[in-house]
Length: 293
Image 1 (tube, rainbow, N blue to C red):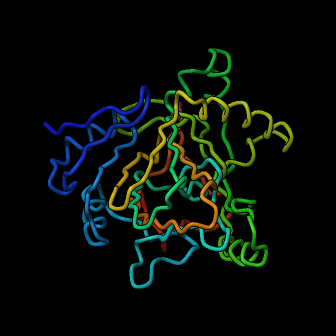
Image 2 (image 1 turned 120 degrees about the vertical axis):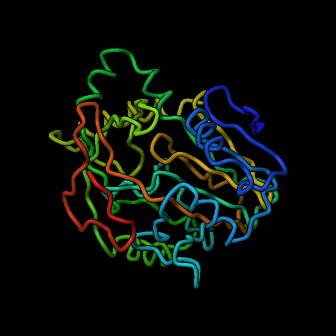
């Protein structure tokens, strides 16, 4: 049995000095379902090793629906903070499409001497924390997720931010997802919101903002958060179906580069079994393999 060590009260476990591709898949998956995020310290993988590890969990997505991949690597997204363009917003990866990734892997290539951590939050624990009336209310809600909002704000370079936004929204997506998602493997319920969730179906913009702010505040309670302090060669695997993450912009002008590879997922289902539906945009088959409802 692989020895994952719990590193957070509600989320996170780590293992050191082990090749993730040498571990039994069922043990890694069981640990992921329990801990939501796994940190492989000193994994020592290259791009091929990261792709091989992610492929063990299913078909891969492309790097991103709109943002370019690493050159020559269509399934790998470069994550860096060059020229002040940093996505320091709580989010779940690519929820603006109907079938977001089920799992995400991040691998550290270059890390700053200070800051540059990644925060990961347990949205199932957040759901359990809700008072009964709020939980029952959330069970009935649906939210519209879109890529057309201020996901990245400029820190220093306005022109670069405008260019990035044009790329990010070159295809516009709006998808309705249940606010409470039932995990397809564990059956746990979690708050499926984050930064791409911009409006509650059937409510005004101002009402939506207030409700989303209240629900999001439960996700980002300190007790629900794991802080990953990177060293080069580390690999993190997290369950995109039941977590959110955030990259604090706290490392000045120091370089920081990660590579992201994501595993294709299915359409989220709510507590009644209804699944997500497209409001605007296509089914993103150029990005992710088509999944059954």
